[in-house]
Every structure is written in structure tokens, then in C-alpha cells.
Length: 268
Image (cartoon, rainbow, N blue to C red; front, side, top):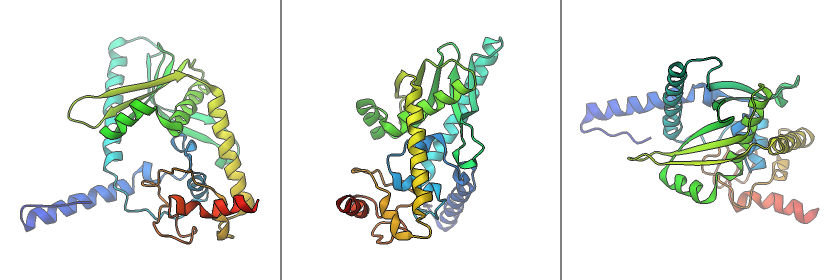
């Protein structure tokens, strides 16, 4: 957090407002959510998913929440606009399903159940849309390179959730909107593919089974057996701890964090 003021009074007020924002975010439903959601299933880093499955204490607690807070505000605003559009159009059922809970996979086993809040389903287009409010550099990257596997998996998981709710799903859509002084919108979409969602769920189950078998909580040296990608995106990982040599205390990220996995591969 950066808090500044033009005099002592203003400085103190800036610090209090900043701390209020941090505390409010720390106690929000989004932050307190413990179960894995559709937005996390496609995470390329298996070690990060293993930490999440174990509900491991987070180490990267200094992450700045303002981008996520702005994104939450945008979701509320655009949701209200589409609800107003439903009212203007009239008719039942409404064209748009806004911020609806969907069950991607039901299960009597709580840790295997997967639910989430789908941003928008359009009954006319038979498409599920997901909003992503991103920085300008990220917006350009997604425009040039596509959404990446994590977002792509999330899109198809929500497609599966809508199909489970009885809605026909032809396409899944991600709408990237840049946080910028002018409106920049990029849309990525592709035909809905149930197999993409099922393969992602099977991978998650495999990692969960590995967690149960290795029991890294009782055997911390086994955290090394959960690999990280060759080019991991560690910056916002809740378990990032630069320089860590003890994975039970946090992951150093990058190539150094994959040494154990590399050794395992050589031994095997």
C-alpha cells in the first residue's frame, strides 16, 4: 500500500483509508473462500494447487488487492446493467442469466464438489460469458496470445456448469476489458467442449490423490514432488516466498523452486 497526504492530517487519513481497504478485502467472501473454484482448476502450477488443497498457510500476504477490488466493482456494475436489460426486454425466461451459481460437478465428497458464480449466460447466443478486467499490457498479451490455459479451462468449466443447469451451450466467451482511460474490449471465444472441462477435473483429482498419498503435511520434504511449470507465473501466488529453501514454509518460485522436481525426475 502507498498512502500519502499533503500534511500530517491528510497523511494519517490516507493511511487509515488504505488500511480500511486492506482489512475489508481480507475479510471479503472472495478472500476467505477456501474451496477450489473454477477459476483455479486450470492453474498450471501443480504445487500451487497442492497448497490450496491442503489449505496451507499463505506466505505471500503482501499482495495488493486493488486490481481485484476494481474488478469486483465492475462485475457488480455490469451485472446491474444486464439485469436492467432483462427488465427492458421483458418475457420469461429472461434472456440473460446474471451472476448465477452453477454446479460444475456435484459429489457427496465435499472436496470433489465444484461450484462457482457464472458472470453471464446469454440464452439467445447460447453462450457463457466471463468478464476479465485487466491491465493494458495484459490486455495486449491476451489479444496477441489468447487467454492461456487457466482462463480457457475456467471458461469450459462454466460452460459445463450451465449445461448441468439445463442450458444449451454452443460457445464459451471471455471478454477482456482494459483498465484504461479509453474503452478497450477484446473478445476470445471458441465452441464449448465438455472434454476440456472433464480433463481439467481429472487432473485436479489426480493432484488431490497425490496429496493424499504423499501427505506433505506430515512429510514436508515431499512438497518437492509437486512440480511447477517451466515458466511459472509466481507474482500473485499466495504461497510465494522468495529465497525459501523449505517448501513447507513457502515456495521460492521460478527455476529454483523446481529443483526438487527435477531431481525426482532424474532419480526416476
